[in-house]
Image (cartoon, rainbow, N blue to C red; front, side, top):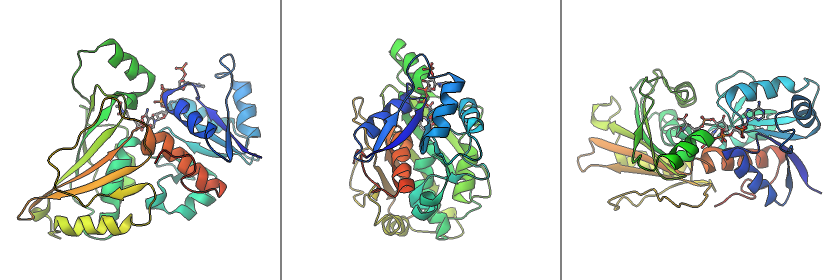
Length: 309
Ligand SMILES: NC(=O)C1=CN([C@@H]2O[C@H](COP(=O)(O)OP(=O)(O)OC[C@H]3O[C@@H](n4cnc5c(N)ncnc54)[C@H](OP(=O)(O)O)[C@@H]3O)[C@@H](O)[C@H]2O)C=CC1
Ligand SMILES: CC(=O)N[C@@H](CCC(=O)OP(=O)(O)O)C(=O)O
C-alpha cells in the first residue's frame, strides 16, 4: 500500500524530477493531472483536498492560488517548492539539517528552500549560530548555476542561444532569495548576492568569500571547517569535504541528478581569507531532492528513501 502525493505543476522542470523520484519510491506514488486538466481549478482543488500530501512545483502566484484552494478542514500536508512561503507565518522552512528533522516531521505546511539559499545557508547558518561568524557581517555570495535553475523558460533560452557562455544577472540587487537568506541565517543585514548562469543543464556552485581577519571574532578557516564537519556529521545528505588540496572545482555539462550537497572551506596560509563553497544540484538538494527528503520526514519514512545519493 503506497501513499499518494499530488504533484501540482508536474509538467515543469522541478515537477518532472519529483515525479521521477516518487515513481521510484517504495512507499509513495505520484498523483498527476492529465494535460487537459493540469491547470483546471476544479481538478486541482479536488486533488489538493483529497490527497494526504501535495507538492507545489509552480510559479509563486500559482502556488499561493493552490494553497487558497485547500479547505482549512482538509488534512492535506503541503510541500511548496516555490518562493511564495519561505518567510511566511505558519510555514516551516524545509531545511531539515538546519531547522530540525522533528519540526519538519510535524509540519502541515513546509516551504522548500531556494537552490542558492540551500548553498548559502548550508555554509553560513551553522557558523553564525555557533558564534564563529558574526550575525552583523555584510556577507557576499558569488554563485553560478546551471540553466535548469530558471525553469522551462531559461532552458528554452539556453537551448535556442548556444552562444551564451556566461550570464550574470540579479543586477538590480533585489533577487527574491534575499529575504530567506537573511532570515534563516539570522543575519542583521541583507546579503549582497551575485548570481550567474552557465550553459550546463544542472548543478551549482555557491561561494561565500570572507575576510576572516577583519571580523571581530577573527575565526580561523580550520575552525570553520571543523565546526561544519561536526554539524553535518550525521547527515546522510550534506557532507563537509576536508580535502582542501584541490586546485579547481568543476561543474559538468552532463552532470547526473544528485541529491547531496558538498561543502568546503578553503583558507589562505595566514588565515586572513577564506572561501566557503557549496556544490549542489539545483534540481536535487536545491529543489526536488529536498522536496522528497521533506516528504519522507513528514510521512515518517526513511529520510533518504528514493534520493539520488
Ligand atoms: N528549477 C529549479 O532549479 C528550481 C525551481 N524552484 C521553484 O519551483 C517552482 C517550479 O519551478 P520550475 O519547475 O523550474 O518551473 P517551470 O517553469 O519549469 O515549471 C512550472 C510549471 O508550472 C506550470 N504552471 C504554471 N501555472 C500553473 C497553474 N496556474 N496551474 C497549474 N500549473 C501551472 C507550468 O505550466 P506550463 O508547462 O504550461 O508552463 C509549468 O509546467 C518555482 O516556484 C521555482 O521557483 C525551486 C528551486 C529550484
Ligand atoms: C538560474 C536561475 O534563474 N535561478 C533561479 C532560482 C532557482 C531557485 O532556487 O528556485 P526559486 O526560484 O524557487 O527560489 C533565479 O535566480 O530566480
